Amino acid sequence: MITVLNPRGQLPAIKLIPMAPRLDSIDEKTIYIVDIRWPYTQQFTVELRDILSERYPNTKFIRREKAGPYGEADPKLWEEIQKEGDAMILATGH
Amino acid sequence: MHCTTLEKTGVPTVSIEAEVFASLGKMYAGLVGMPNHRMVTVPHPISRVPASVCRDYIKGNDPITGKPIIDEIIEALTRPLTPEDMRSGTQERSESRLIGPDTEETLHRLFLENIWTDYLPIVLPTEERVAAILKGTSHEPDEVVGELRSGYEACTFTVEQVAANAVLAGAKPEYMPVILAVAASGAPAIATSTQSFGRMIVINGPIRNEIGMNSGTGALSPMNRANAVIGRVATLISINLGAGGVPNKTYWGSQGNVTNYSHVTFAENEEFLPEGWEPFHVQLGYKPEESAMSIFHGYSLFHWKDTYEKTKIDSILNMASRILPSGGYKSGLSLLLDPIVANDLVSEGFLAKESVSKHVYEKTLLPLGEYWQYHLVNGFSLPMGQKGIEPYASWLKQPGDTLINRYRSADDITVLVVGGRTNDFWQAGDFHLIGSFSVDEWR
Image (tube, rainbow over all chains, first blue to last red; front, side, top):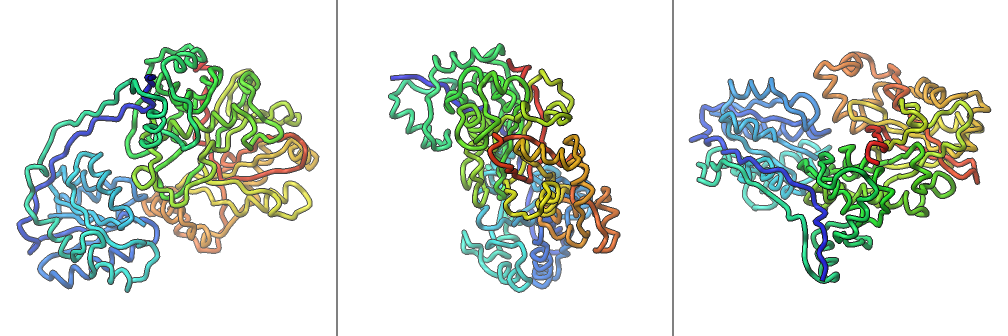
């Protein structure tokens, strides 16, 4: 019988984040569709906006492409969404 | 990640994930503190599919739940939260220092089942073996070396934990300064990306001969213990100290990379550098008597037999004209030249490594129209240009037949000498320097 050292490193603690309250309905709301700009996937969010707009005419769907590469934050856009939007749909990679 | 930023401000979100990444999305949501983040899955791939296919996806069903995708999107934004969804606080995660006691057979099975190995035979890191290998460094076992993020989280680790992985790989104590430099670089050898990265690890200075590294015949082959083991440890510490390397959880390289077994790890052949050609670490500012470890990011190597030119420099230009251009996504060119080739280049007038780099930089041009088509350029340089970052912003305003340099600067072109002078062989790769780190500070 032998004892060995654990080869693993120390994982960081996870800070839990409460989710934001949901909408009671999407009527009369403004919903942002944010494209993270994975290469050659932009058509998907264009179609998503168009289909959702057809289906829910009382909801405003605004499509935006996030600035910078896909992993990078876009503080200006986030600020716009906080001020002008009620919810966000984020899409998508690959 | 972007969703949690908005959720914190009170904006409800839903993310749409391609099917093949659904489990990744769920796992990542847990790691960033929102395990119940709402996601909807669509078929894969999405890249380059026509509008009609996108519409079919969106109007169809979630491939995992079977429910209509549109209904799921709306429900994700409107279904009230549960108490679980509103949890806050901190989840600590700790690992025990020791494992066992148990039989060797059981421990070997444990390491395999937990994917704490690279599936090659390992040496179990008993306390005695780790203590022995720690004699190779003056640093205390409990000293924190740094942080590594091979998966989705940055883990911290100590000298002792690096030593445990060095034992796993079959290292000798004298390899520890190089191994610790690799660990301290913070550059994981295995990454999460769907692309299948590799690494090149180049050692310079007296440490090469002190620990018996190979810079001559077969230096890039599995024919030298130090070369093989140092490269292997880079992989093991990425898996174990960087929380990475588990397929379909923390590793998504679609095909993987055969170099990941021990990477392109070698010592530069400083002894057969032509006069006027400096060792790589001296080019970076180290003294010749200092030892350094340089780590590069890239994918693969190509060999010169794909070219036909009579002179070495023209042959190199042929190869250099095919490598991924430098852009917002770092890439570069690394030339691995047998000493015979280095001397041939001197005969062709290249009296220093820098003159080779400069010549290749100046002579490899491509039209902007072609540049923007490269996948990584499209994904990284184009968005930077659209944000106003130069030179990409100016390039976006120029016509497609405008010629630009393929590489951002001559510094993106590295010249290294390795080989045993049995053939005027050379290879080139898209390896770009991440950084160069002192080995001596870890003695």
